[in-house]
Length: 225
Image 1 (cartoon, rainbow, N blue to C red):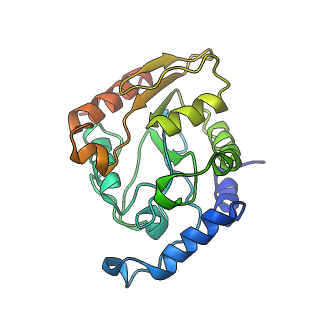
Image 2 (cartoon, one colour):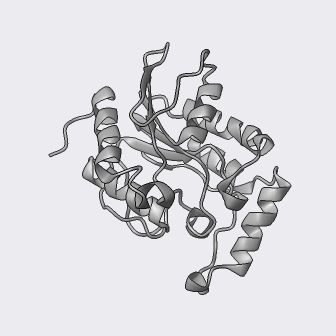
């Protein structure tokens, strides 16, 4: 019987994309000076969160010195700092920070994952790399039967999820864009919490919080006290 744990084992052992394997392992060996004493993860990064989640959040890919270092999605970089602070404010995370896999972070009602599981050079997977990785996301979502809302962080994730779900015509991407799917689930769009977006004000704390408050509402999750 398929399980999230079994899928995680498959994901972390994957070596299907030579360019990504070479890059993630080179980064893990050369490291960044600030993390010279870290033992980098240097492998594909699995999803993380609540197996009973009503909300699933899909990002682009692990960051070279973030999740590729820590082994947990959106952990160890400023993008993750911005995201987890929002998840804490909106009641999905028990703490506003995510530093490493043993830091006590827990998610409730939400699952975090990515369209591509290896850190890509310049944060840009190729179409072939995207397509080889897509079955992992498809199988992962199938193992999360309680999910009622899919939040896509950025246009790349939105396109992958739309393709995976076979949506025709493809719903347009936009921050706060909302689409009801034929099966009754909902698709929400958000700008990606990259430094390029958050440092320039393209994405603010209030904008990201609004998406997650709406996700809670659509998923019929209890109010945050």
